[in-house]
Length: 190
Image (cartoon, rainbow, N blue to C red):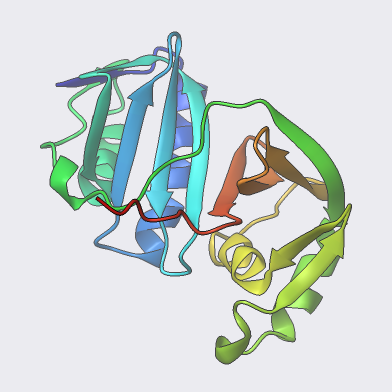
């Protein structure tokens, strides 16, 4: 098993995202998918949303789940263009992922408003609407996850985007995002 991320800056950015995920949940698992020239990273959070990030590189096997702590150690301690991301724990991944895109922007949340919005949220209100625009409701849990990840740092605004089928929502923060399914999946009866 190997994760190849040739550029040191890309490895540092990926390690930063994984480090934030592990701080939120020390037992987090991270799914890595090779998308042809890029690696897509997905990680669950305690807020029932996914963290998503991309970087230039490749992973073998092309779709694998590893523990966040193992991946963080490989990226931070080894810091080489090619690392072993840790043992596969594919059985620990729960849930599905959105398609590769395209995503269409429907609004933006000024970054300076995130802390004020999060301060008004109670634990019981995680599914309450924290922001609404472009006909889209952003549940509080998405902004709590943004704040929990320690974002935003640089962006002037967070972009709210929808998947092509409108089933998924993204709150984009720079090169990373918080992703949540907008509609529950229908169970197939057999």
